Amino acid sequence: MSDTKLRDAICRLARSLYDRGLAHGSTGNISTRTEDGGLLVTPTGSSFGWLDPERISCFDAEGRHIAGDAPTKEMPLHAAFYDTRGTRAGAVVHLHCHHAVALSTLPDTDHDNALPPYTPYSIMQLGRVKILPYFQPGDPAMGEAVRSLDGQRSAVILANHGPVVTAGTLEKAVYAMEELEETARLAITLTDRRAAMLDAAQIASLIQTFNID
Image 1 (cartoon, one colour):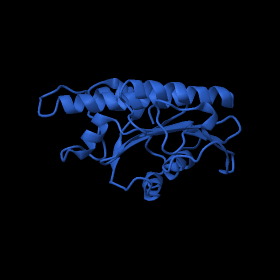
Image 2: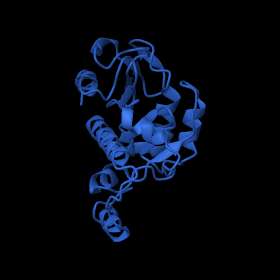
Image 3: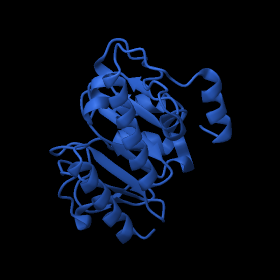
Image 4: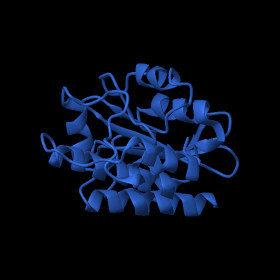
């Protein structure tokens, strides 16, 4: 996809997330690979509701900022996913969405596998979602925490902050993020209820059938 189309796609998908309440104010950031190996990144302090495609930050394949506004301060977080996931990372989406943040604060949430297996779709799109410790926004240590996972997770939740998802394309990363938030909403809704979940055999079948990472 050309850079122009990618810029437009970032703005269109970001506006959709904003309009549906999955992003608010100037929170959240998106990046995606370009055809030449560079990156397009949402600018720091920008709102998903009012992005200008011409002001999207642009990096070349060597990681140099060559055009557009200054990028999000969470660049170390994005870079960590690209560096450790290789060709599996075509885009990264980071939001502060309500239910995922709430789930990260609950003491009974499994920090190694935060999303209960209520449906096959969270497993298919996200695998196991790890909750990372709290870091101050912009702290490069967030990127180091992602690097410590050695590319083994496509999604994490930063405790008391928000989820981060990577996928092969921009659209897939956005869809996976939506699935994460919806599953977190199920988890919050069903707290203290005896909900039926997929069993180990059903999960194993999904992993094998769909070659889940």
